[in-house]
Length: 421
Image 1 (tube, rainbow, N blue to C red):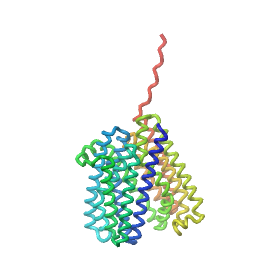
Image 2: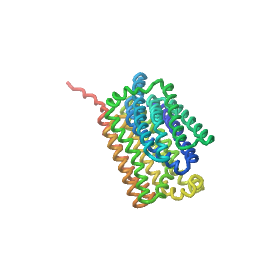
Image 3: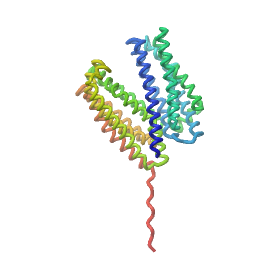
Image 4: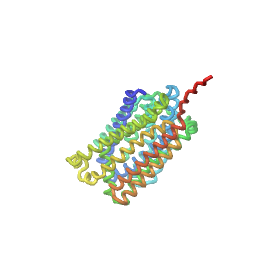
């Protein structure tokens, strides 16, 4: 296990996620400025729907890809990537048709947003699939180049739309999806692979045990976050929900690092499993422990600098409600980091039933802990409730990793004792 190479590949993942997150933030800011309150609300609803489709696409296409084809021979990788990208294209096409139908049926800005989004969903899904194809091959720089292309095109398109007064919601959504489609086409040249829709049925059959479970897992993650916010809003009011969201923004720079590492953690764990399976547990523990330590450092920094005027500068008066949430949020993120180390190991082992059980359990704890905490103590109570749930989730994930390793990694046989004649 070459530590230097692993750190370098993790660095590419963090850099790529930083660019991707930066582009999303800038696109949202431009849209908020151009569309106004109601238009931006419609854009946000459509954007959440895009995130749900993205999770579904990853569960069926790229999650099985990084589990089973990380570090494999180039010809095998090319065939797998063609099938995974074809699956992403099919998911995006079906979702795009449904989005267009919804756009026709829904009134006002929401209908317009869904109608415009539908045309971009196929390209959005394929563009994302190329990123994970690069990470599976250990070529994170390719994913970074692809995201840079999309980010530059999207920002340039949105700025041009604002300057020419063509900044309606349809234009913003078409630019968002259209520039992703251009980046997806660039991905064909960067990978040298074309999406093969005719291989989708065989891909889904071959990976049905992984794909179906990862699909449910990914949807559970997204829906649990939405349910928690709804529960907090219902129990403690919109101000409490806003405080939670503000605390998430304050933790944002670290979460970029966390998501960047998550993109490459499974491929790296898969390579460790192939080269030195007895080191997998240690690798996962080190990965989760380092992330948890960085989360603790970032949370401590926020607790120190926010009262010095930084909180007022970043969030205006909202920071007063967000500040008490920072400590429990930091604890929750630290525990989530420890879980993510085990998650990478369980997925690398291909133990989809155990991964599904752990994820559904963690998502349930996330919603129940956050909801009950909101009823008892508002935003702060919700954050502590989530942290308690995350603590239980750590135990669940590591137990599943231990059991999965026992099932999939053979125990070295002890040499037979010499017989005395």
